[in-house]
Image (cartoon, rainbow, N blue to C red; front, top):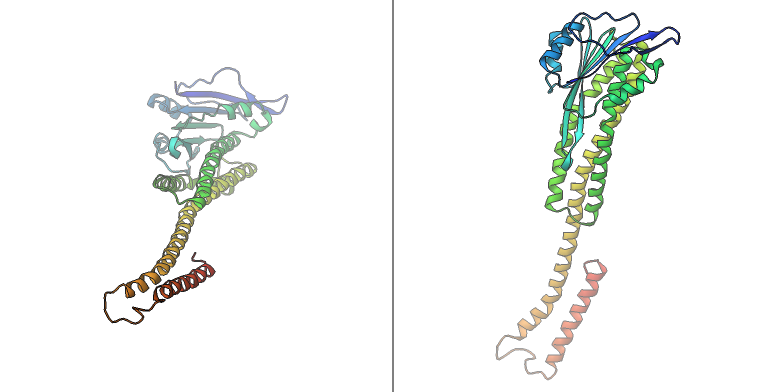
Length: 329
């Protein structure tokens, strides 16, 4: 059964609050008759066409909104219809190998009902429902407050994912300072950057959705409830800022590792050049005096051998000290 919950909340005159009406709400397709001051809360998870049809007839949902709700590839948006407000939010899950998978939760918000249609998300709304039912004063604010609570629950689900990705990025950043990333790490970096680009493209419009709910004059949103949606907007912006920071960190890892590797290669090149210069001196002197010419200066000099060795040692010692002074050795 994909109808997760169908409940009615009515006013409690004695406590001036809203409480859950005992017993389940009947979903039979007949027009609903909600008492004044109350509202219905229906939660669906990957519903069947028959269940969607029942809810559509019972609450008079617009067919275009229903078509979007059962298509799990919608982007976050807010649409205004005559009898209700239609909101699409996107959920995200972090799987193995830092792979992000996305789900969708659509909301129909009317004057006396709120319906959620969830696809591809394992995070049910049971905790949100229990929390609100334990606080009748908040429930008395109406269905628009419920919309805020569920949206806040969806957006808060982004934060553990950002925590995990930040931890992975910082770990790779520390490793890149010591050694140049190997091929496996480089592939992992580019996979993460691709995942984050998808996150920004799919979750990014959530900021526009929350901003519209927080600032625009919408028929189904009470002006006093906008402050609650402002809080959700802040959470979305914080998640997006953290996501962009992770992207910048990953880009900096590649850039920093390349600079460090170039520096290491430059040091090695200077050392090789210095040793090549040191070896060039004895090679040149020995090469000259190793030629088999009969008439050469100092060829038969008694001290020529010691002079050649001294010359080699002197020049090589001078070059060695010079290279050490300029940091090549």
